[in-house]
Each structure stands twice: as structure tokens, then as C-alpha cells.
Length: 218
Image 1: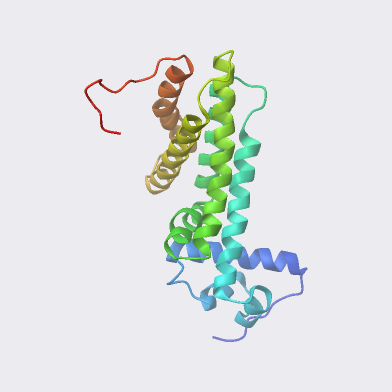
Image 2: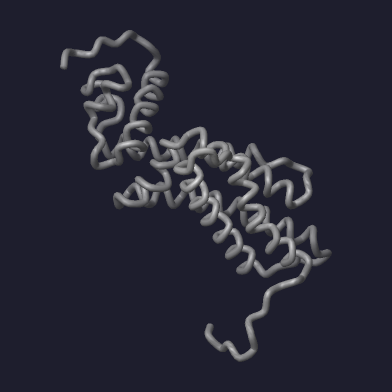
């Protein structure tokens, strides 16, 4: 392969170009199979330039995780409609989440599949992003509980558990939706609302499910 000719452009622009190429290659081929040669060729730069800007394959992958995580969390936060009823806030947040993961399937693959399966420091980077989203959803559920009851509502531990369950379901559903032709972001969000809000709505109204009295399993 001959030398790649590059035209001069600001470093920040060139770096984003490299990250765009890296996310695509990592997302489609996986971290282990991806090569710096492929990334450089797709970005239209020389491999030495990639190393000059981003040091190593590990550092490049970490930079991809951080960029995609920041974009996803920003999209979810921006998507939640302020001043809306609790169910509408959850709906708009879920639509923003599924719209972003559908529009950026390679980025979602990097975050949800690749980062979690190749050890540190990648696992910690992905976990930090997930923790931020869980904390945000926890606040949404807590506010919904306060709106439904005129007192503090659900215990903090139960609210945190509901948020974990909701985020976990959204993650799995996003991966399924991206792999299933014809499933739109709106349909994925509606599916999760059907699954989650029926239960959350009952919970907010004080209608909780109680295990049978004879069931003493913790």
C-alpha cells in the first residue's frame, strides 16, 4: 500500500476523522480483529499519523469509548422533555436513547459489546457511562414517585433497583432492535414503555405485587 496523502486541516478535525473511522472499524470488526492499518486507510491518513495523535490502539479505543459515551448521555439528557408528566419524560428519554443507538450502531457496539468484553481499562470506561445514565434514570423515577404521592414515595433502594432494571432492559432492547430489520426507535421505545410503565404506573399508584405468604425465599 502506498503512502496516504493528507491535506492540512486542524488537529481537532483530523482527530475526529480518525475517531469516526475507528468507531466504524471497532464496531463492525471488534477490538481484537480491528487493525490500525484499516483505521488509517478509512480515515484517509497514514498509520504513523494515527499513532502520533492517539498513541496506541488501546488509547484509540479508549478515546472512542469516551466520545461515544459522552454523545449518548448528552442525547438522553437533551431528549427528556422538561415540564412534562412522568410518563412523557420517560417516553421522550427512551425515544432519545433508541434514536441515538439506532443512528450510531457502531458506536453502540463499541459501548455495549466491545468495551465490556476486552478487560480494563475499557470495562471501567463503559461502566462509568452506564452509571451516569442509571443515576439520571434513578432521578426520573424518584421524581415520578414524588409526583404520584404527596409524600417522599418509594424507598431509595427500590428506586435504584427500578432504574437498574429499566436501563438493563433498554440496553438489551437496543441491541436487539439494531439487529432486527424494520424495528424503529419509536417502536423500541414503545415496547419498553409497554413493558415498564404498566408496572411503574401501578407502583406509583401504590399497587405493588406481593409474594405469596408461604414463599420465604429471600
